[in-house]
Image 1 (cartoon, one colour):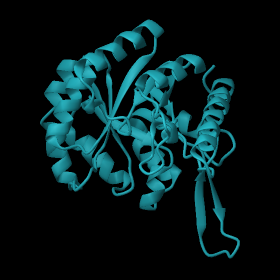
Image 2 (cartoon, one colour; image 1 turned 90 degrees about the vertical axis):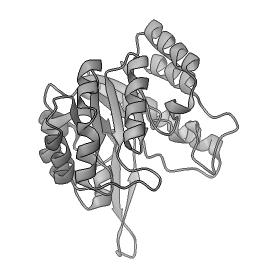
Image 3 (spheres, one colour; image 1 turned 90 degrees about the horizontal axis):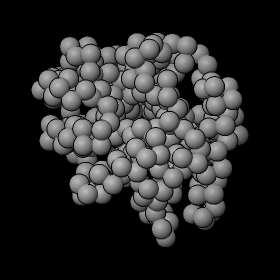
Image 4 (cartoon, rainbow, N blue to C red; image 1 turned 30 degrees about the horizontal axis):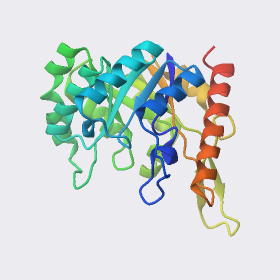
Length: 268
């Protein structure tokens, strides 16, 4: 299994709406970080939308990544038929075999049945292009609904991007989502966290932590994954500081600490 980073490893640096840095990071800065951290791959997700880039820019990214021996993975959001078809083309153009998709988008929250029909329509194209579609578990749907989508596609090219924390928003814990979805997982999002009860005892806060300093049972999760899981991608929920510059520095420090932890303990 390959180890990589994402545009969501450096979310604040790429730019959170309303808190953008003066010079937001682009795909070349992320590629530079992947080289510095000596990881295998870079996943560029929907917070740095590839479909907004001209073909010349995409081809330059492909060339520079190849020179650096960094594999590219593509990420997108809003899995309408049009967007899915468009991103299969982008994935193919970049020479990538991994397309991670979050189903929901602005004013787009399809039913499970609708998603199955959208995916089934492109399974021949996925097969022809040698692309794996990894659908990410997110807040709205339950693990068994994601399983229904994968099984309903009847394609070995359709699977899961297993995010370690997202499904807490749907009321499901790590053991549940991993047990149900691990056999179909193509891509793992490694995101550590800490759940702390408020001092008044009325509820919890779930907050990001560097990998190895939270409650993520990563060793157990990795044991559940099969050989079809191609990559593990570091993502971070970095709590912001009072200034964006300090937040970016913290985010960068967390990335270094997390990747070092992963290399020393899980990806030798």
